Image (cartoon, rainbow, N blue to C red; front, side):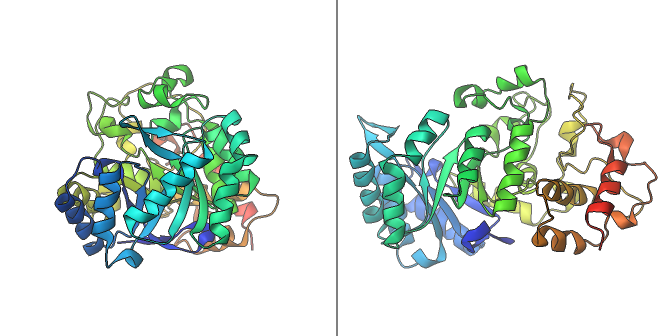
Length: 382
């Protein structure tokens, strides 16, 4: 298992984590089997938003004796009412549900406390100025929450939360189809890729700006919806008309700036092992370039999507990596030292580019790669 640092929290987390939703309805035996498989394979990050009592109880029992081996991302503002999950901003309901989470998980702390599902400016304003954030800060002061986060599907709202400085972790929905959705697409339309009809398969600038801002500010992204609810795994349901495999979906997310953990939902140990196969595959086998070269009408945005379809490079540059660090550097008035260090640690940099242009005809987004390499030489000049 490969690990990353969860932004400014300093926590060392597995690149692949467990999304908790699919634990709903599982038996104690099945829940424990999945956590056993996770531990055996180095998975140490677990998201728990589910308010259902049996689900929480089963996970608590499965965690007994090994709580310290897992980093738990637990959610505030999720409650179980009238036989169903509900999001709330009622502070008393939030308190009761969170106390229930601690009790059923048999723990006295949560590593990352997520303020759940903030998708509108009005809701964000209410959270920032209301009792929910105050409660989260109170829990953090007591050591019950180690860090505060927020989950969202809206890049514009998420960016404002990141810029506010009060969150350490952002749980956000990422996959190649969502990255081409219109920025104002609501969650219902997002799940059906309806925003793509308006955006016309154009890489959404709001999302790219969000990812860069998270990387530069040390706000870690944990990814949900990496598989697009499974639609990306079948040609007939994928908006690209071609199927991806689970490791390719995971790799796409890991290539976005700011991303530290990709959460996958699994109902069986076998499904988790399929996701973990990502760690054994070669870069070529994890490549998702085929979805951008499948004959669909993708608008040429001129912005790198880090898909590496431009490869091979005769100078052996990782063009996507060079461009990612360039994009991060351009977000700031001065180049962050960490970005500069990561750039110069690459086996080959823009200094090695032959400016031959062989890469550019391969790019499905019409990126002027040679110009990017020229800018990288200038910006990162020692």
